[in-house]
Length: 359
Image (cartoon, rainbow, N blue to C red; front, side, top):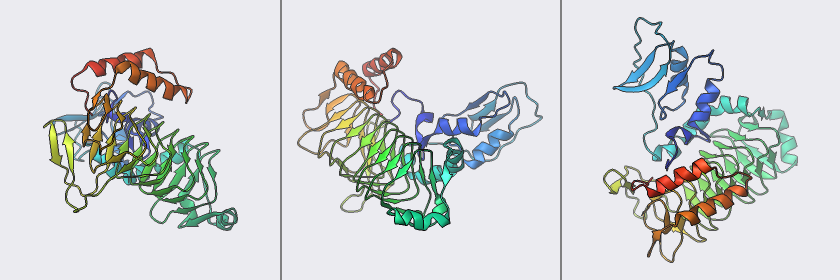
């Protein structure tokens, strides 16, 4: 699902790997740091990189993990720690809870959140907000709004970005983080760990999923153990299966072998690339992989693998005309006051021409 984008722009929890690394190294004292794009910003990794000096390299099994540019000041650098690298899209939702936990202090600082206090419990209850679990696991950025709802922090924190909103009648279980200007719409049920980016609209039922910036699942329907890219829109009642009827291992598309392979997992939902859309009542099978710039619709269940730039996704699918795909992207982005740049358009056209544009 990283078509045309660096792996570091994918979310570890509710924020991108690169944003978290940038926050971890706001003060670098002029040092230039090179990082493997798949290196996750865990406490351990951040501390190791912090302790590197100019000229030092962190190399693991022949792979460069991190490097501080400059003339070496060290006689010997030996790091035995195995780095935690993002190795597959499935790990994005599987490591969501860890990502939220690892990023929480950075979120609180960067978003300037206010942490609620136990003494506020009764006041919030009188306003219709009922909290099961510690109050100090709720963190609100300026302008965040919580309408009458039920929040559960027994298993993890809940953090809301600036101008975000949880509407009336929602049930949210942590760990859960959503970015600035995002909304949880009325009557939504969220099971953590779940991470939602900025400028998103979510509704229906969501379980252990990661939704990237500017994407919408605003209506009824279920998604679970899933990863949704940016600028996606799931039509009303779009639903994913995340568990097979016979409880067996879920197969998923593998680009290297160009076939479905066993995932080694029982729970696996939908993987969707950037700028893809679904029609109302779309129902996805377990372990479905949808590329970028797809318009998924049809009378039957979509295929388990839908390559990028596809119009349809079930029977009688065809290539999505690139000009129409770009027009749809422009319109959606304009609705958020963002313009598709000429550089981005050129890159998208080049990806469309490529024969290897599957996610």
